[in-house]
Image 1 (cartoon, rainbow, N blue to C red):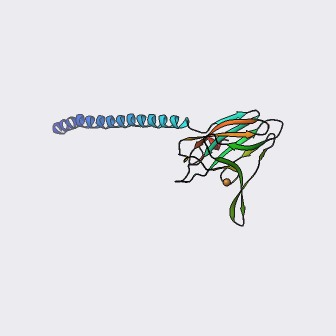
Image 2: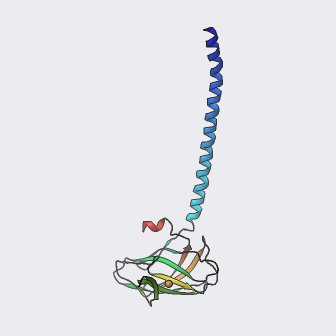
Length: 185
Ligand SMILES: [Cu+2]
């Protein structure tokens, strides 16, 4: 009886130190998790700076201009964005200029005989109270003779020319997929 109690007492302190050691490790893991969350936050906030923006000119708001990175030595690219017209009158997108070099044209995409075909158009209508949406598989701005590759994380300067609202400078974010903010619009 005495011997057993003695044994339990001798075991207890050992058990405690083991336990607190374990909690020590958990505490370290929690600190590590905080550090990781900190790094992740810093990364996302930093990434946020290159995220697509909205631009406005007159009654038009241009949302989230973006372009996928070019492949290898290809010097052709595509730009997408949307234009919301909150004005009382219709406007038109007449064209896009590339101040850094290259040619840009507005294209429509249509499936004909099971094949996706692109066709240049002279202007894209933006009816009053409506939205013009350029997106993969649909209308887009085609870029030709680019002076260099479009690299993910970079930006491409564009001048959008509207018939009524006039020209506006925007910067398209170069990214593989539209940023999360695209889904909000
Ligand atoms: Cu095209």
